Image 1 (tube, helix red, strand yellow):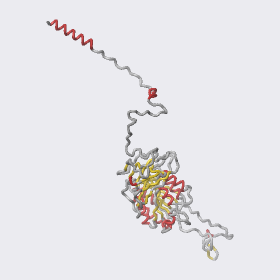
Image 2 (tube, one colour):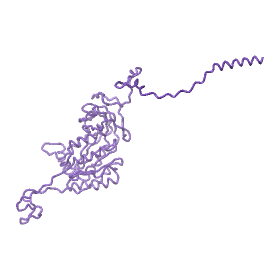
Image 3 (cartoon, helix red, strand yellow):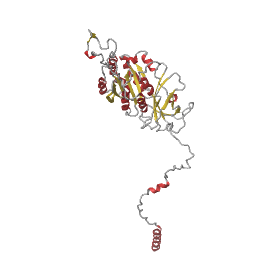
Image 4 (cartoon, one colour):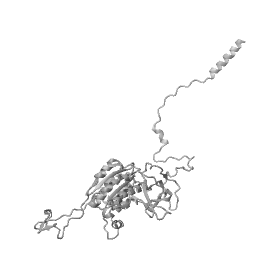
Length: 422
């Protein structure tokens, strides 16, 4: 019996050994595939073939992601914008900008000249070259400022004294997040200090250095009985004014030089290097007279518009006198256009303020700084080709809200680096 059981067990064990599979060998290392395998995946000159299973499915895109991108049809005037633009909240966000992003700061005032708060992106319409554009970003948040102060030192002594007394109020108009640079001009433009903290000691010292006595009023008399100066018994009191016996000694009237264009351009070139996300502003304190600059107004305006720089100004001296500044700004016939500041402010979306006394000049600093800081910010994607360097007009409207004054730049020139550098 035991022998039979042993025989059965031996038979079963021999069957299991025959059916057990052999242990496979380890895989042999293979070389990586060559670039020739890509020929069936990427073919130069041909687009990728869409997957037939997804070709008929609608494409989903985040709202506003492609709004206003080049190639899209412009919106009609009565057509509502369906996509919601990116909205600013809290602190102004520093965002990367594509080469076709256009930034438009906008100020809105009522009939009494007060700023109008509480508007939304739905209230605005923006046009480039008369074609309505989709708003891709909108914000009413306060933004940090980079301000280049341009101070006219060719003013008369009385006016210069008032400007000097008002400069101590400059730092109070700004926050610690702002940066300020100081420039002056007379017969030439000079940088007093580069951009520094708006409430630091460096700015205070620079403002003291910017104070000058100003020019003497009046010009030498070159004709009439006093042409050679006062005389006693026919002899000149001042030998320097004596024409001599022949009476042919010429008295040269000094040329009146006010290099305002050069000063604005010098400030603009430094301001263009300031970081994105900051409002770029040139603030001019001057009577607006221009003569003797190497740069022309047209050249300077084009540079300002190409680098998203706005010019604001406080007019002093003769330009601030009642009636004179008002007439000059409106370019009435038979009046000399000696004040060039209106051309800069209108072309860049800035504004003018006229102040005759020290207290008014001090208040204008704070008023203009608050206005710039609390502007509405609108962005859109320009449909124009990036390599097109021609002027592009901009118009911002508030349909359904008549009586409001809208202040924005009328257009811009794209630059070679960035069509609307901001």
